[in-house]
Amino acid sequence: MSPGQAQRIVIVGGGQAAAQALQSLRQGGYTGALTLVGDEAALPYQRPPLSKGYLKGEVEEERLYFKPSAWYQEQNIELLLGTHVPKIDRANRQVQLGHGGQLPYDYLILATGSRPRPLTVRGADLSGVHDLRTLADVERLSPKMVAGRRIVIIGAGYIGLEAAAVARQMGLDVTVIEMAPRVLARVTSPVLSEFYAAEHRRQGVTILTGVQLSHLDGVDGEVSAAVLADGTRLAADIVLSGIGILPNEELAKDAGIACSNGILVDRDARTSDPHVFAAGDCASRPLVHFGRSGRLESVHNAIEQGKLAAAAILGLPRPAEDCPWFWSDQYDLKLQIAGLSQGYDTQVVRGDPASRKFAVFYLKNGTLIAVDAVNSPPEFLASKKLIMSGAKLAPSALIDTSTPMKDIAAQAAA
Amino acid sequence: MAKITFINHDGTERTLEAKNGMSVMEVAVNNSVPGIDADCGGACACATCHVYVDPAFLAQAGDQQEMEKSMLDFAENVKPNSRLSCQIKVTDALDGLRVTTPESQH
Picture: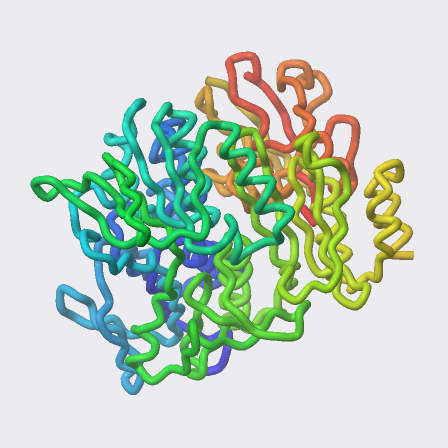
């Protein structure tokens, strides 16, 4: 079977990458059998609002769906929701279904996503200890988000801090604990960490960094406190864990597909088996603008790899590979991130953080590799293009707020 | 409720019933109107839901926030009636609205 001749395509997973692959396959002219198998019960939905507007109760569930249910019928897509896939039989090109039966494929797309890294301390199984990854997680958590209650959030990454902002805005008493010496330590620079820690404190959140969780205490099976290694006891009605995610690569690994912190794929999202593709959080891909491979946990990545997989399966030209981008909403702060800052040697702050509108640029050997832009869309949008073009930029130009970002970008591109 | 007509860059038209409170972007995406990517899902984070609003409806489409303005400044082929469709909320006042989608969001 060569590209463009597929008659049966199966997608495992029901998140952003899966939804994109479905759309791109049909838009690309594929008319054969198309089946999505997902272990969640809901129609494919957007995850970003789960730690933002949806957690706050501002968005109805239907508005999270990528497409209404009628669309799947119109597009002749078979949805097997609430269905687990325990095994891939690559030799016979079929996937096993959890409730029995097999589903044959010509091409398979693994969009299995990721899962929260589990808390392993004593008391992690108490009632009142939550993750924040799925609609079902929010359904369990939401009713407990009541003003005056005490929530302890473990982990000061984006999920933890976004949830902290929402909880604070809902009037809860919020404490965030973080093992690293600063918030967002894994993902950004000290300048941004300090800014966000200060903002959360100003909003009334208690932020404790450089602390170790010892265990969780409970009363009658219900969590009552988070206890730190130094003995500090933080009384809690709710504990929310946000300590990172793990790629769901086991299905691929068990089938003998190459994995290494994610399912390894090439630029076309193809795994070590040419009939199997992987897209989204679960995949480790070439990062073409950065000369290395890695796993990206983002909407942009899921959409792009969904498109790449669909195009490769249909034998269509490879879609554009964009500069990685991300965003985070906390309070009235919109953080837009372009590029990957790991390995930067120079940082330039443009604007005054006190004005709540500034950007931090990251350069390596004079080349722009990333930006964190707070309430600063021009800096974000201009940088996306500059990073892709490998533009050299002078720190003195970037720091000068009297020159609009548009002009700086035009000069750098010239 | 409002009837909104989407005009593709090639001139093809489609009129859709839109519920109040939805964004114009959501109406387009739910009905697979071509030309609107809306990658971020309406968070005003990506500038891929750019449309041209019938100038007669610009006032009814509501004010532009600073974020939207500065995002549009970087979109391709921006015109005075350019908007990000995720930032336009459907109301009765938009009944009869006509929006044109650009050839590309990039």
